[in-house]
Image 1 (cartoon, helix red, strand yellow):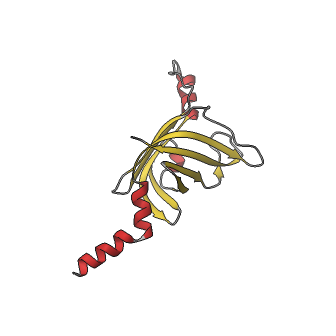
Image 2: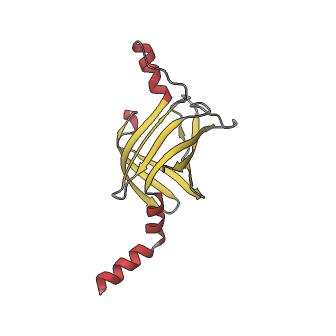
Image 3: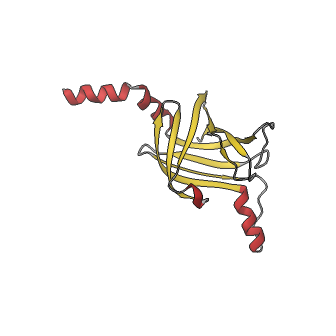
Length: 154
């Protein structure tokens, strides 16, 4: 009986409900960067590509690429591809309106071992995510906030 009561309390808690709503596969609809004192820009083009996967076991994985990538034919072109993508994975947890990922593998070695905090909210079947303010990977020397819109992948 105690187990059943504990199970019901956990299942009905707001944190558990929010985490369950996050779980799933999400397709990227829009990605903007907002640099200090500048209007938002589509840093990866008007139609970026990407997926966000949040598992029931607490694993997050994402891959985002620019809409205008071309295969790299030489070392310089292949190096340039690094600037038109984001990818990382780790265990995540939900705290209020934030999901926080402890990164264990990333396209950017500087992110490994860090916590990436993302504020989120839902609008219908869309997941809206804002990064915390951080140094820009795309625009060195500037601070940025990333704004992403995801749609549940069906």
